[in-house]
Image (cartoon, rainbow over all chains, first blue to last red; front, side, top):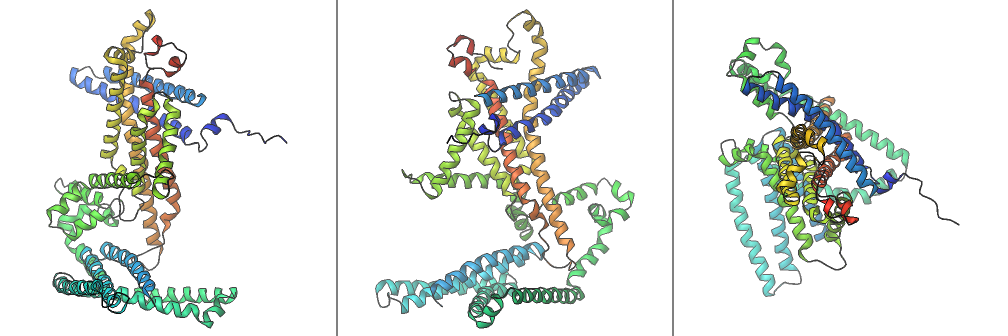
Length: 85
Length: 472
């Protein structure tokens, strides 16, 4: 008689508790929120110093959004690579 | 009744005395709790010395030099014990000391009574029939309920509980009104009182004090309000707990690795299992080439954060990770370490190339001035997001437990009882899961940040060494 086949998906086999997946996914919201905030506050600091309000704050905010999205993309890509390993 | 019975009495009295002393320290006064604990300890030591004396005089060692020596030490110990008892009676509350002293004796009486009861025919008659057992349990619960109600009503008549509150209510308005902002009196407080610039910080401070469960350091600070060391401990409470946990882990690691056996057992077995599991886990993320180097750092980080998260669930302890100072320190350590790895592995030029987004063509170089601030922002967001997430989750967990513990106390109709329904126990599984998950989130992200700073292992495996020296 053939042994019973494990029909779980690959992700579940490598990460039986699901903790790694949960940990990686939990990072995404905070990175998306924190990055624009960091950009905004740094820009605001620059605005106060160079009297350029509100341009540096707005630029920082926009760059922060991009940075947050990029970080999330990189982390998720890396996570998928480690899952395939 | 043998020595085994006395050992059981000692164990029960130690636990019961500890819990009762902590309850007295929390709900009545810290000094009273201390006096109760001292009385119980005194009584336990006294019992131990009496036992030693009796054993040495009547046991197999009777007449030998060892027996004589033991009895001599026991008598000398008793002399010191009685002298210390006299000092304690002068310094602490005699009533609480006597209550503590009587505790082990009460335990002996209750244990002996239980032994007689459990062996009796009447008990067997009740316990062997489910209906009789159910009726007996119901009767006991009813009697307890009414007895507690009667006791509370009797206690409520005495001025002990009501006097301080009424006194506080009378004296509070001139200087303490803003301090009651968190209580029910907030609604009646005048706007002037809230707007008072000098009084406002007092209100905030009192609100801060009321956050979370009471811990041992707060109890010590309450027991010794004028001692400089108590203020020092209270001021650096979070650091003291962090250091204590670190030392505890150090001790466990030392004990587990002190005498390593080829076939491990006990603590060594448990620690090896944890280390092996963590090693495999982090190597599976970072890869077999670079992974083993970072397992000590990542494993320590995970165990330390998990211990700190869970420490708040132990009664009279506190989670250091519920303070932003600790989580920021941890995240900064990770940030500096990750940047150091980047510098070390890629070199200064490689690190700069990594920060510019590794431009390799004209489009890459044109985008480099845009990629640099984006990359810097991304790097800065990492420690902030790590610290805020850990702090927010553990602080939230603690607050949830506090809120439900308070609800459990207020649910009981006997409001002056020093205990309530442990409602917060329902959330213990959630807190355990949350603590483990947050420790995991922190370390998995750290390992991913380290991985992003390392040269590509994938290229190395295929022999393209030249193309390997750039990170993501």
